[in-house]
Amino acid sequence: MSAQIIAGKTVSDQLRVEMVEEVAALTKQNVIPGLAVVLVGEAPASKVYVGSKEKACQQLGIYSEVHRLAEDTSEAELLHLIEQLNGQASINGILVQLPLPKHINEKAIIDAISVDKDVDGFHPESVGNLTIGDDSLLPCTPAGVIELIKRSGIEISGKHAVVIGRSNIVGKPVAMLLLRENATVTICHSRTANMEQLAKQADILVVAIGKAKAIDSQYVKPGAVVIDVGINRLPDGKLAGDVDFDDCLDSAGFITPVPGGVGPMTITMLMKNTINAAKRANG
Ligand code: GUN
Image (cartoon, rainbow, N blue to C red):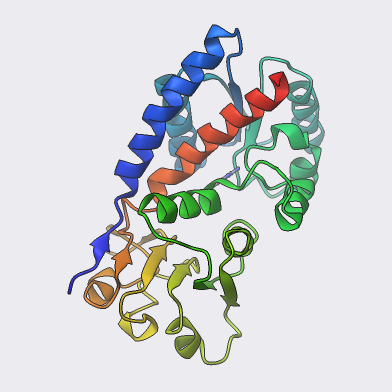
């Protein structure tokens, strides 16, 4: 039997329709959610991402500002801008596009963002709140993974979830969110022994390792939910996930494609965080 394909674009479009209404209701109360995106330098991929964020804001009626700074901007100058945005009432969310140029300390910048405006969910206090279970802005890609699973009608509670990858931006937070949803969670990484054996026990398998097609059907229990967070560029220019999609299609119960799976959810969840931050600031 062939797996059901989880169409991230369709779920993302549904969420955006709901959000247009949410923003319209807030606007009636004179609350216009606002997002500031800061881009330092000229990295082509980052410019594309920033453009997509700007477009999503326009589509939903969210106010946006993009601060495009030169590659040689100093850390002090960037910190000064963040201080200014922290105090700016029209801005509810601040996103500093990563990676930053090497002469800027990324941690110092993330730490300087007000936790109330931390729409990336990367600030240590946001990470702490996520772990404790307190209400906080959730990191966008992990939150998108949970939303995709839930909106596909899949129950998380009581399931064995295996996360492959332990990065601060995906693996660790997605494991915490799955735990919050009452899954039993195993985290695998590059030093894990018997990874195949562990992965094969998963009802829900989330893969975020950044290695094209590394996970094939040998890692997948028949009927499992397979969520592929990887986006890798192949030598022929095509995109591929961390999961060998074609090989897993017969064994998985549900599977996300790349592109068109988790990817479209990230910016949508950023919009959701901006709306939630605006509600809190005015609630
Ligand atoms: N660069 C690539 N992905 C992201 C992201 O989710 N947030 C930020 N700030 N930078 C990124």
